[in-house]
Amino acid sequence: MKVLIIEDEAVIAARLQKQIGRIRPDAQVVGIANDIPEGRLLLSGNPDVDIVFSDIRLSDGFSFSIFDSVESDAFIVFTTAYDEYALKAFDYNCLDYLVKPVRDKDLEDAFLRFEHNLLSTRARQITSPLPGESAEEMYRRRLKIKCGKTSIIVPVGEICYIEYSYEMTNVHLADGTRGIVEMSLGSLAASLDPREFFRANRQYVVGINMVKSLSSTIGRGKILSLREPYPDVRIKMSSSSAKELMKILGL
Image 1 (tube, one colour):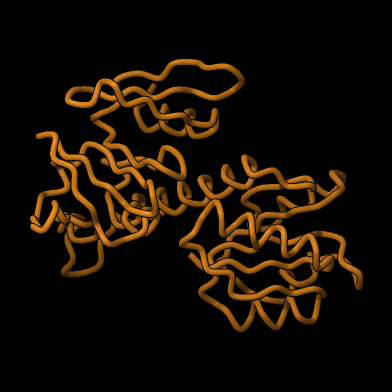
Image 2 (tube, rainbow, N blue to C red):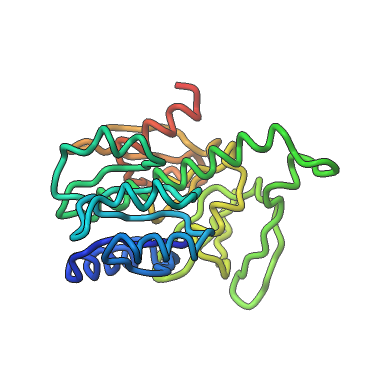
């Protein structure tokens, strides 16, 4: 995942970069622009950037002019100390609108929203595969995992859930086996069929058929519980992620 930051206050830009590195270690910040000309230069020079985190009021004008002059498929997350520009922001490819100071939880929700949009786009594309390409070929069907000193290859249908902890991506299978994959959680999630797997939060991907229940917790979040053989697993979800999962489940 490639990220661009447009922010004219160096301290705020550095703080945001640090937050991104903590919340999404696999994200690569390709540049930080502190004015409109530099923003145009970096955005046009990085056509494969995935997300732009942009302040709205810069020292030399409004960042909207950057996106008016440079074509980009990147999602935009506007970060600002003002909320009066929200309606105008959504005239652009705006994924989220975060009021400063940006909280970790709001930033995490923005990343999850990006991932859900990306997976939904791929799911729509699957209905129209390229000539000579079957729908199934668009997503991973098998996965190599390390179990101790042994590597095994398993069908993705045997995966119950995937957990990122202690800087490792752990895969938990239907027979109770746990193994490690040498991929970031984000990269692995993007390679799996979104009709079968769901990114619950920054730490977990779950098999949709493994979802047993969603229960309320203190605040606005939810707790996701899994079926056997992992009935004791409890996964915290934001309310927005829970709503997205409910839609996928048709509830």
